[in-house]
Amino acid sequence: MAEALGLFALGLLGLALGGDSAVKGLSGLAQHFGVRAFVAGLLLVAFGTSVPELAVNLRAVHEQQPHLALGNAVGSNIVNLGLTLGLAALAAPLLLRARMLGPLLLLLAAASLAVMLFGLDGYLDRWEGTVLLLGFLASTGFLLRSGHREPEPVQAGIAGHAATRTGLGLNLLRLLIALVLLYFGARAVVSGALRLGEGWGMSPLMVGLLPVAIGTALPEVAAAVAAARRGHGDMVAGFAIGSSLFNTLAIVGGMAAVHPLALPASFVKFELPAVLVLALLVYPLLRGDHRISRQEGTVLLLVFAAWMALELLLFL
Image 1 (cartoon, rainbow, N blue to C red):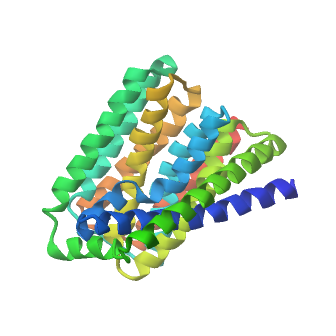
Image 2: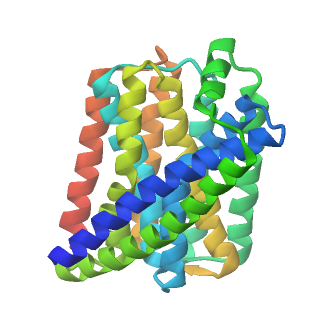
């Protein structure tokens, strides 16, 4: 068990370092070829923080563990909306000025509902996965279009987040390092997590939902807390919502588009509804006083803790 824990922890470190290197490399490379820093920042909002989850899910699918990948995708969404936003708001109230956050959250709720409806027969077929992928392309287009209508301070913050050196050689090296770290990190995480799951009596779905989803999110949680203390509430919420959209539409949709997916019953009846509940809980906070206070952050954390407790009670 100690060996599996060490392997899992080492893999998480590799994923964190690889994800950071990938984001910097992709942002710098895009700007090297003429993409504006603001547009690069919007694309990072769309999928930048999901790079570690994507690496883990690709490895899980390669090892014929699609349920672990499904658990990681939806578990990461619950972590994003409950744990990440909750802890960030506890560190410092999140001021939310970006107008696109509310519509993006509604898109996430709609995407979760679509997967629930598609999965009522217990499967996601190829055509349903293709619809989800097209939904991700449409949501990315919406993000790019609506981003240009944001107030100047919001645009400046997004552009500032993407700021990095743009040298071609440096960023190619960053991407090479990222590929190596992500490959070995994902392999270690999947191997270690499956061994831990066997020892703890967890199914692959539960392994993805809890240790893998929470573990891969820890660097994002730390970054969100630091960003909240610097007053970057828009970026904290943007990354949480954008990453969740990518997980639901691109990762789950992409898996189904390649090969029809058999869905565990709890995935449709419990985990996806949990994402929907959290999304609908956060939405009034974005539309009301445009901030998430410490008290509201505490509520999000309590909802997350309640979900985790129910998962352990009902499915272990």
